[in-house]
Amino acid sequence: MKPLNNMSFVINQRIPLVPVKLTINLGQRFLWVDCGKGYVSSSYKPVPCGSVTCKRSLSGACVESCFDPPSPGCNNNTCSHIPYNPFIRTSNRGELAQHIVSLQSTNGSNPGKFVSANGVDFDCAPTSLLEGLAKRVKGIIGLENGYVGFPTQLANAFCVPRKFAICLSSSTNSHRVMFFGDSPYVFLPGMDVSK
Image (tube, rainbow, N blue to C red):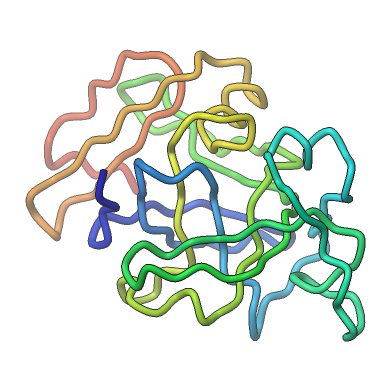
């Protein structure tokens, strides 16, 4: 299944919270984010090699050759992952990490308060993987199944069914909406969900 390069989704990630625009990919398992220049967070937590999370992510390697001071994307004894950009058909070394993520809740009809989940797994990727992505996009949100798949992580964090729905618009001026959890999904076309 092809990724939707012109279809993006915004999550709030890190401390302090930063809106991160991501390309939607239905055929990729992982969420990956650029951790290059200008990446700042006090909540970044690398996932150790041999941990349950690392094993469940099906990682087969560890980061052991980072010679710079520890920083996002450069930590030894960390679960290694290979984030992939399908637009340039390139992957690169990254590390599995955890962060806080904040999303807007809904009752299915109206936007609700923002809710947060701690310890959401993602791949910390190098800036070079942003090539070919839409303007201002900082990574890819993979929606495939799996223990570290974004829908599974949200289902576990918020005790909701492991389901998601995407409302896409043919207009570039309309908002796109992604729902995680059970229905109803009753936003009407053209409804402003950003308020």
